[in-house]
Image (tube, rainbow, N blue to C red):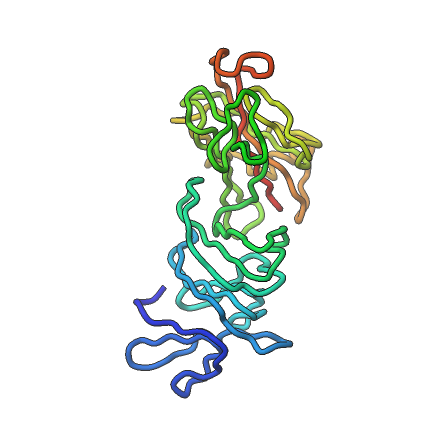
Length: 297
């Protein structure tokens, strides 16, 4: 963003005699427009909420309201201003955004942007009426074994957002994804494993409706399963792919599952936990598994 300034938004068209289209910047001397402001083809547009947040690409101003474009760029009810240009947040919402807030839910990665409003979908996913934007993060968490909807095999529920707890009591392994704007740049990172655990990155064609007992954890990846990468954790962290390794899509194709654009795949990472007494058989084993992550390619 540019230097600190006051931003105002609402239903107005002009500020200080300048056409601004519902949002303007005051630099201490005069008002300026933000690249044409916002618009709606069928209704009188309005910006109803503003919030500054860092989504992993630097601080920016986020706007929500009753609009379908920002600076001429399609942006359904929410948009990001980086100081010089507007950008959309994925495919946006299906109805207006009323409030924005930043909060750190403790699931790693730092604070994220939250939106509420009258929408029922965000980025094409069910979100009624609240959604979280993680910026450069990729994927939608599922199969979260923190005891809210999924309980772990021997009472070893994990922390919020994680897989089942392990014998090191890390709170369970947490799988997250990041990627750039390209389709083939996703990187999976799992934290909270055993320090040097042998780990396997698992890809499934679909998420399972139920959560199967899987060692000391729960598996929710199903369909055509592929073992994409086998690695040893470093300080409980596994990253895949790393520099010089085939991308996820290339690795999947080499294993017989070509992923077309727009397809969804489910991911989890399972890893060795050699303490047989932690979750004794039945039902446990000497391995555990992270939460799941859905990626749309």
